[in-house]
Image (cartoon, rainbow, N blue to C red):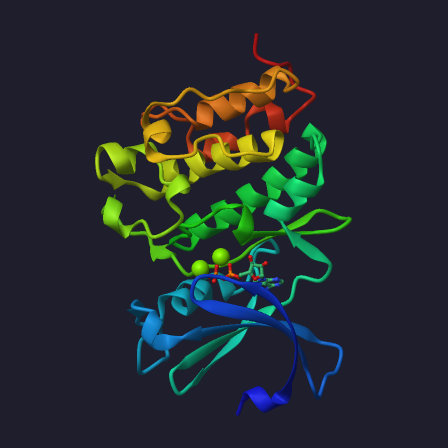
Length: 273
Ligand code: ADP
Ligand code: MG
Ligand code: MG
């Protein structure tokens, strides 16, 4: 069986609202580093049934398991295993070597170039498309839940603690458990929302933040009514993509399958006039 004594626990590498993340190495295969995400079970209120398990597991584990069946997506952090010890749950995750959060990367890098942004956004979209194919709504995509490895800029989506299964039914506003500034406007206005348009909104929010080094909207009022201030250094195609992802009416917003085909991702095709 698996237990924590098989790991040599190293430094604390991250702390969130409900848990700590430590780097660790597997003693028998010395070189294999993992990230241990430790949580208190009684502080987690969501459990889901998973095939092959007699008892429901943390929703975070259940949602990640859907993404771990082969073929996997290289842009989603891997869940190797998990342990339940008394009131604790420990996720044994792939350790992203020489990485930073996207939050830190944006802080450290003034005026990120569009080529770098494009490389990051392609990988984020790949991760998002993969989640939709497996019926997972991440629900908390923001710059502290995205890791970027340096210098190659490989992107890994982490933290499925707010994730939900996608069904035919729309989500309710109260189903949205992620950071408030990521909430799509239709959730605020209509109280219901669908996964795909919400993901497209997130793509616009992330591209805006990468290109500007700050949030597009700071509060609910500006999510619903605020004008976006776009920097003049951005290309026409980049401005167009941000604007089309941040259309407040989800029916008029760019659709998820159209995002990758946008001319910003295909710089040889002519820009819109
Ligand atoms: P929480 O649910 O508490 O927000 P996260 O899963 O987002 O926890 O992890 C908190 C922080 O720990 C992240 O922002 C990141 O800095 C770090 N971290 C998490 N997982 C990994 C990992 N697999 N490799 C490297 N760092 C990680
Ligand atoms: Mg987090
Ligand atoms: Mg979380």
